[in-house]
Amino acid sequence: MSVSTPVRSTAATVLLIIGVLAVATNLRASITSVGPLIHNISQDLGLSPAGAGLLTSVPVLAFGLFSPAAPWVARRLGLELTVFGSLLLLIAAVLARSLPVPGLIWAGTVGLGIAIAFFNVLLPSLIKRDFPHRLGGMTGAYTTVQTLVAAVASGVAVPIAGQTPGGWRISLGIWAGLALIAAAVWLPQLRSRTLPDAVDGGPVTRRVWTSPISWQVTIFMGLQSMSFYTFIAWLPSIMVSRGVSEATSGLYLFVYLVAGVIASSLTPIALQRTADQRVVNLGGSILLVIGVAGLLLLPGAAMLWVIIEGLGAGSCIVLALSLFGFRARDHEESAALSGMGQSVGYLLAAVGPLAIGALHQFTGSWIPPLLFLLFFMLALCVFAVLSGRKRFI
Image (cartoon, rainbow, N blue to C red):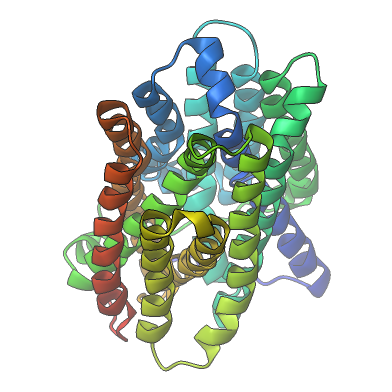
């Protein structure tokens, strides 16, 4: 069964856009606030670098493991109620993670990963369905919002932790308030109950999973996400190891994410000017290669490489999410490709923070971890070209 695009009034469309952007404010903030605080968290909880890497990988692992469940739940509850329920789960998970109760930081981190996994899958499908002619613009808008708020979260994490009695727990817990605001903004959408297409186990899903272009898009999604989540988790620690204070290390992450905001807002313009996505995909991927290589070869210019890396990351996430629509003929195929790309892709991405932490613990240096990441960014360039060709599932 295929569900047609709902007919909405102008006011309802505006409310939907505001609702999508409100949800987008919660897609990364609860994750990017961890990196600048990971040293304090590790000391407080007795985590090794590998353990810290696992903690930062848990949300990404949850993205991969629980993304396939999002369409299934949405078909039973309705898309609008599923998004609302995910916001409630996010509120509870962020609060639980900040409580001084053994084990809750892990349970809360899993919970917020599940909630965001649902947003990751459902928002691109919703945009493909409701804004098929503004796919690049809407994708750019919500990724710009999510990255801007993520930048703010990383920039204020250390100052808040240093100025509140609860330290890092308060700094992590305050983001439940943002999810609460988004839930309130989303309330008008509960008047509707639309369903995603029945793609689970059907011919569309089988076609998607056996299509070479689907795997190329999926690997592009996974490798660019590997870079993003590795930098989110470990950039502050890398800078601290080079003599930078914890507060300043958070500033580096803030600059990285602000550069991503700039790139994510400009990338939709570039998409409109190209016949396919090969050039823009490759351009964003090359920036990621330059950023990692620069940190290895000329660490004294770290801020320059962080800016370049941020520009590549901001561009590539818009491109990856847009490919779910560009490589599909309709929103049914887009939903299936989004589910595949975000389940397999994020499982691939989770290797990054985990492996980086383990390599650093084993070698005591950041050079082998950065070489590891550089190898995968070079591979990303290959899949940037393949996935950018004008092909359909």
